[in-house]
Structures are given as structure tokens and as C-alpha cells.
Amino acid sequence: MKKLVYLFFLSFLISCSSNETTTYYLIRHAEKDRTDNSNRNPNLNKDGLERAKKWALYFESIDLDAVYSTNYNRTQQTATPTAVSKKLDIQSYKPYKMFDTVFQQNTIGKKVLIVGHSNTTPVFVNKILGEKKYENMNDYDNASLYIVTISNDKITSKIEKVN
Image (cartoon, rainbow, N blue to C red):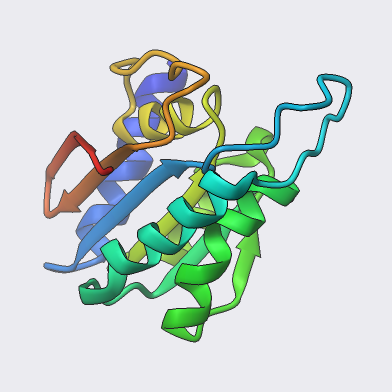
């Protein structure tokens, strides 16, 4: 029943958006500092800071409308170079509220970057798709880019490796 309501709502949102296409780009934060296992909110390490800059270069030719990130140092630091280059503020989201109705309404017809974690990024993608298609990411995978496109009544997804 819950899935049926979700599909109905998603169909309604899509039909209200005319012929607008919504594209979500979802990534996991870049490489984090692993020197202190007790630190629940580490910063990015040197490689991670470089990867964050590379993400900004990747998105250079994509007209993003919004950048979302969880409220952790490593995700915010990953999102920052792209947000700065696009002159966008980073909007925080809570993983337990991902892809809620407010988020859906605010992103219809837009191109959105979402920065999360190995255990939240695939879950977010699955919520957009309305099915469990993707498993959690490997804890050392910082190069996967999930792209979900919603256009009319069609939802597509793919994963790219960006090094």
C-alpha cells in the first residue's frame, strides 16, 4: 500500500511538471581522514580535498540548480568546491528525510547534486526510483556517481565511475 501511494504521488508530481526533466546527481563524500577511528565527523584527507576539486571540474559544464549535503564535515567539504563554482548555497538534508514531499517539490525540473555517504547515497537513489535497485557502497568507493533522470513518466538511473 505504501509503495502504491508513493507511485501515485510520484506520477502526480511528474504529470504536474509538464515536460520538465529532473536530474539528480548523487555522490558519496570524498576520501575522509581515517587516522582516528573514534572520530564520528572527520574532515577530508589530502586525497579527498583533491577529489572534491575534481568533482567541481566534472560538474563545470552541468548547469546545477541546487547542491544538497548531509551536515557532516566530509560531505560539506566535498560539496563546497562545486557549490562555490556554481555560486550556490549548500542546502542540508537529513538522511531520514531524504526524498520527502518537500524535497521533491523543491527539485522538480531541476538539476541537483546530492552528497551523502556509502550507506545513504544508494538508499536515496532507491527512494527516488521507488524500488531497491542499489546496495550500499563499498566504504572505499569515492568515485561512483549515480545519475537519476525523471522525464515525463520515465525514470532512468545509471552509475558512472569518475576518477
